[in-house]
Image 1: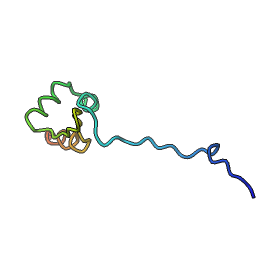
Image 2: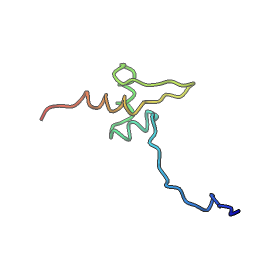
Image 3: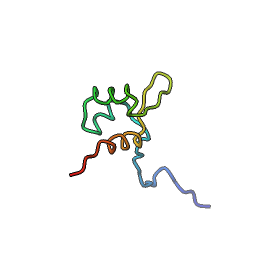
Image 4: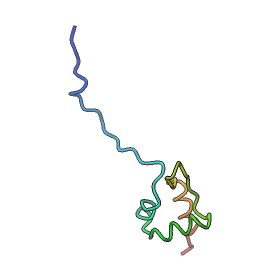
Length: 73
């Protein structure tokens, strides 16, 4: 019987995209300041999640909020 060494075989690596990010990371991704993100969170324009003490912004919510500011050329 032949033994297969799975540890030596390389599997394709996939970098998982996060579902949600911190307000600081959301600001970085959007190219905005943290103050702008926190103002949108405070006004309720940008939806967020709160898990324990951690505030997270779903990437879908960030995309929707950004698209709501789209202007016609």
